[in-house]
Image (tube, rainbow, N blue to C red; front, top):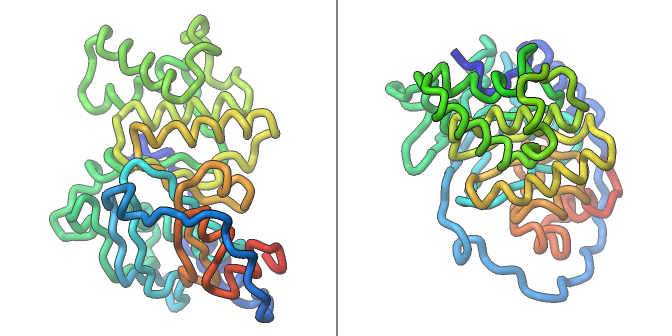
Length: 299
């Protein structure tokens, strides 16, 4: 039962073909001069946040194709981490490793460690259902259930045994408020969720994920299918969610990463090339490939 993880179908063949396409079409990156030094020093991550998730020596294979190579990365509590890089570089594969969504692909093989609050989520005794409650997911395309707005948000709590109406009412209201959509739908909770606009549907899906009280929220390009006004609203929402949650977002939009994230990790051809505070990575990247990407020389 993984309904509360906002899953969308992905096949092993699709994943493997995506990696192969990216590898075959990767540009030859010429060395480039480094960007201008940052105006002010960026604070070190450890001074601001404790570690929520620690990933070390993570490798992912789809059949014989290696999609991720030796990824080591820390995700900090109550922060927004943006994953950037060209298509097919492994961002979404990495994101799916964080709540074991790749388990649904028969050809996927994973090695390394992914720790959540110090415990390995790939340990043999790990409870995957509980993990996906603690680490929720929202995908690129809004996918509300064909039921009322209220029932969409109440779905996960009901599955987890909450049936008292007053408790459900409180959860629905709080989740819609945190997803910044409550004022728009509070008088229409019994209306079909399918009647909402695309941007509203995406925020409803975020509210549905929040209703089961996750600790980490994974977002795979959550604004790429939205218009500019809806995108702006969702970016404001993403920036505010870190008060209650740890957020990891995949985005192709570097300006969006700069606007909403505290930390950024740059991926290329299955390798995590560089990670740093967002300010530092965009103003003074250490790796020339990262400098070339943020300057728009490829990607």
